[in-house]
Image 1 (spheres, one colour):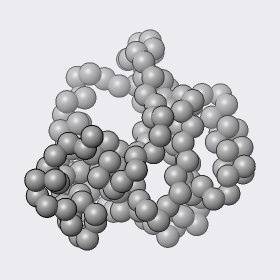
Image 2 (cartoon, rainbow, N blue to C red):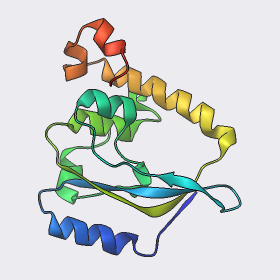
Image 3 (tube, one colour):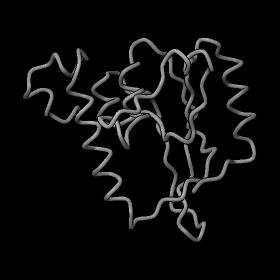
Image 4 (cartoon, rainbow, N blue to C red):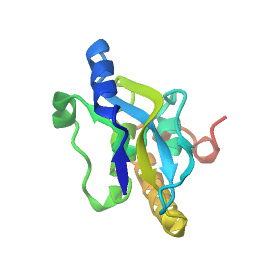
Length: 153
C-alpha cells in the first residue's frame, strides 16, 4: 500500500520540464508501517555508475517513477517468467547506458512495508535479478565469473 505526497506530481513534472534530457525520474520515499507510523526514509543520493551497480542495488523504488511516454513505449517491461517480481529492475538494467535517469532524493511517496513479507519478497526479487544480470550481452555478462560474483565496491 502506498500514497503520494501532496506535492509529488507537481515536483516531478517541474523537474521533467526543467530537464528535457531526462527520460525517467525517481524519488525518495517515506517507509511506513501498517499503522502508518514513519519507519524511515528510502532514498538514493546518486544513480549507479555501471549496469552491475544497477543490477545489484536497483535504481528506484518503482512506485516513485515518472517517465516520458515515448521512452516507455520504446522500452516495455519484460513480462516473461524470467523477470517475475523484478520487472522494473530488469528494465533499468537493460536500458542502462542509453537512458538518462533523474533522481529527486526528496521523499514524495509514503510506502507501507510489512516486515512479515519483506524476506520472501527480497529473496524472490534477488533471484530474478541474478537471472537477468547473467544473460545476454550486458557488461556484467562479459566479465569473468569471479568478478561477476564479487560485490561491487
